[in-house]
Image: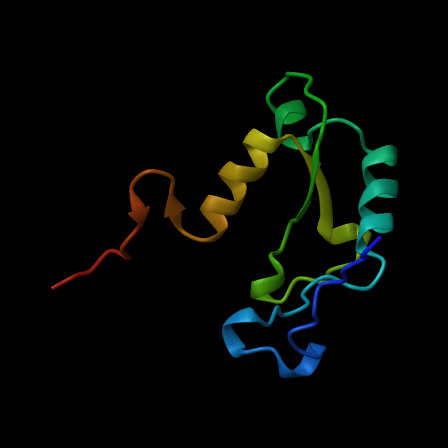
Length: 107
């Protein structure tokens, strides 16, 4: 039997820039996420509108890119996929299917 192992192309720090990933989430994020969904199983946004939907995503209320704390429970909320996509698009000032919104210009 010939057991062929794939050749390691780079060490973690030598990957070309386009292959490197910036770690935004803290170590152990999957555990934090799983515990948070267990404690808060319903979509917070849907609840505000009077509907019940199971949450599938953990959202950062203040986005990490805007300085939000990644593991602070006060900065987390459970959302369903649809609400999470909508909120993320809003956070990024992006309208799905229409591209980025341009800021209002005067003059």
